[in-house]
Length: 337
Ligand SMILES: NC(=O)c1ccc[n+]([C@@H]2O[C@H](COP(=O)([O-])OP(=O)(O)OC[C@H]3O[C@@H](n4cnc5c(N)ncnc54)[C@H](O)[C@@H]3O)[C@@H](O)[C@H]2O)c1
Image (cartoon, rainbow, N blue to C red; front, top):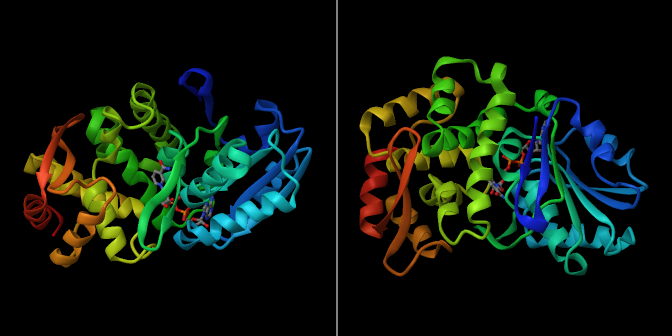
């Protein structure tokens, strides 16, 4: 399946295909220097498959986990780019999950004020969501994505066969972002989770989720308005993620939990919980309300009084509503536990 993100001169193709990693060189010029960024948890053969198609490739392998999405990880990648002699006409290629994509993308945005970036996502989360849209970042301390840029890739190749090596927990984690896409904009996608086996329909799930995100990003690349819909579940989700210490509860799991209080209709909330259980996502969490609020007050999306939240009133439709910090606390108490 091929989609095209239409953003004028920053447009690019998104390929969703089993075996795609072996075909990157047929889709874009790789006859140049390439820095391939991967991590220690991604099977090494994936990066080697891409490297074999490049004119001159160097692979840099960061430690797996959210900890590498840091200033230290960023420096490691930039230093590798410099040591590899990358010039402005060369390319940085991510082969990994959202951590590698966000890190490599931010390095590509910054190195020599910006070089080409290709994203080859290998997790469900990255194939369903993080590899498109151009948000790249690293964390600062425990604060998620505080330092980053908008830097669109030149090409995205999602090889669905690469998902076969994921742990079941990571596989389910990424599906949370597809459930999100269904809840905010595609009722049929949500219902597919209720009636079918997700693994058997993974290409359709990835493609439908990407279409939801693509349609929104094309209208609002820099998140001045409608793109904020993609943050559904992320306000409380990020707060839970930070409270747990980065990496303890996975990103998608936190988003799944963060979405529940933002679903107005209790019957739909129960349906979402049932989908989470079917997929192996957490449906309840205990938390310290004071710590959650402390994080929310420091979130980069928060104002002095509260946060603009994304809500779902009925399946496939969302709206925006401002919520004060006290209201958020009450919502979280009702919906997350
Ligand atoms: N930029 C965006 O728009 C955006 C959107 C959503 C999430 N994110 C970010 O994405 C990150 C989470 O991404 P993630 O869930 O992919 O986590 P991840 O990148 O940490 O990958 C999860 C684990 O799976 C391993 N792995 C990756 N591919 C594999 C494969 N094919 N087989 C076996 N193991 C594999 C990795 O080594 C890692 O240990 C978070 O930092 C989050 O903030 C970014």
